[in-house]
Length: 191
Image (cartoon, rainbow, N blue to C red; front, side, top):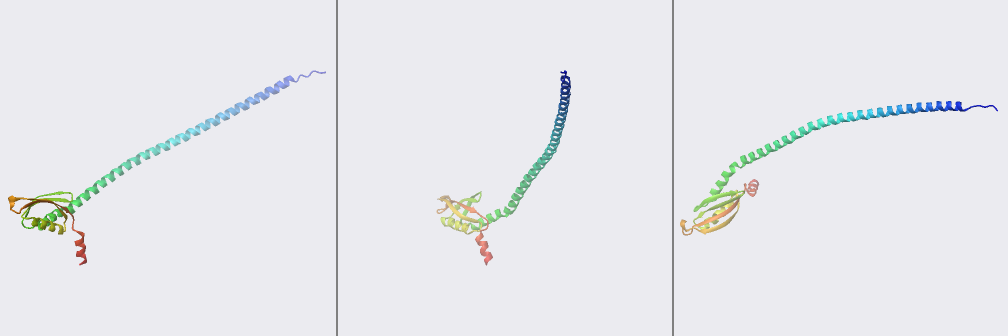
């Protein structure tokens, strides 16, 4: 039988396949490295783009924060001005009322009654004085109750005051200060 040696042919075939396999692996590795490199570059570019967008947003937010602070400051100043204007209007509107209150108090005071002190706390007016008799105090309280500018007179105390006369009385009373009473205005409109 003839001797045929197939081993070198197989070895050559294997060596060729091994070489092709190594070439394919190198090509695959190069393609994978290229793809990974491209992917990393794409992600880095997206990150840089997002950072630049974030930076733009941050600067715009800072500008808006400054504008918001300015708006808040302007609103605060506006409210302060409105409050000042309201106080000034109230003072201007209430300025003639003090004269009205005193005028009405003088008209309500009967003869034989003297006021020693007048003190106002809020809408309460505290009066103290001396009257020739208790009837004068009663008359004073009725006059205050009928007044357009006072209401609810309340007697706090009456004491005898002999140094002003036999029937003289020192008194203290409180009365509420109001604006012009609504009932009288409505009656005047109806007539």
